[in-house]
Image (cartoon, rainbow, N blue to C red; front, side):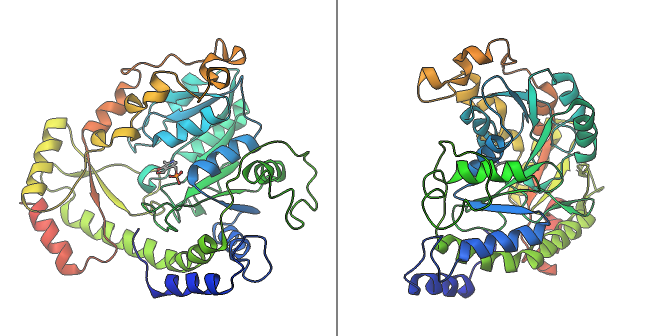
Length: 390
Ligand SMILES: Cc1ncc(COP(=O)(O)O)c(C=O)c1O
């Protein structure tokens, strides 16, 4: 969470005082307005607001027809929810290396493609854009679909297009830790009518078939699904947060660039490469070192001077080695529903081991993140830089 204030309080009050804040009711229709505003902002045909990024990822996969018998390639460095969204559909997550930018490495994706690969899921971790051009080329050649996990990348872009809209579908999170937030929340975007219709049915299986005219024009047959609907309280807050997004990303990027200018290339700090630094969300200045030891030394210097930093190898469930449920192959609450035990998944690539992605582990051990504050002043920047350059 970066910025929140009286505008959100007033929006909440507006929704509460309407006494009519169920999504489909007539008065506020805050969620439906947000769907439309988010869709127009990022440039997609359809947007569905949901309870979480996980809900959006799962609904997108279901929209793409993913299920038992399918493999979905995910990066070795992403929050565990990306991989759990795959097992939630009955499919198998195949884990691939990240490249120097810490996003999915298309070269390793190519090595891990199989006749079962249905979807590849680049994750724009920390708002770093993935190598979408290379992945799109692979997808055109091999016929898989691309689901962008943009859960950490609200408002980021890749060569002028919003992250989440370059592949076949994109998922965003609006949980408390994200760039814009409603405490919890998420959204799916796509231009594909079939993905949209199936995701619409899946994400709100009971109410979509009962309230209002939500199924008008839908040709996909109804099927059983989940309930990931949000209320107009969420919609009202997100509409205010969205108004803040342009200034927020601009301030984050400005401060990231200003700090990079002050510290990179001095001593051992080098800025990590990016597939599009202009489109990168700016939440993080990512520094790369030759060795893990140098990285830890730099981190200590920062800590001694009161500057917080994170070595991503320390970020727990963001690293495949700590995905207990996946590594130990317990993919569901009941053995009969566990993708790792399903007959349809026999022979699929689920050979997980802690040392299967050594490049990822190496890069994560010698990268240092400085979290950027959009409200840093010039004085703050100079003070932080003097610690880092000390
Ligand atoms: C990369 C990534 N994917 C998916 C998710 C899931 O989002 P949510 O917590 O909204 O379900 C997160 C959330 O932290 C995330 O960081």
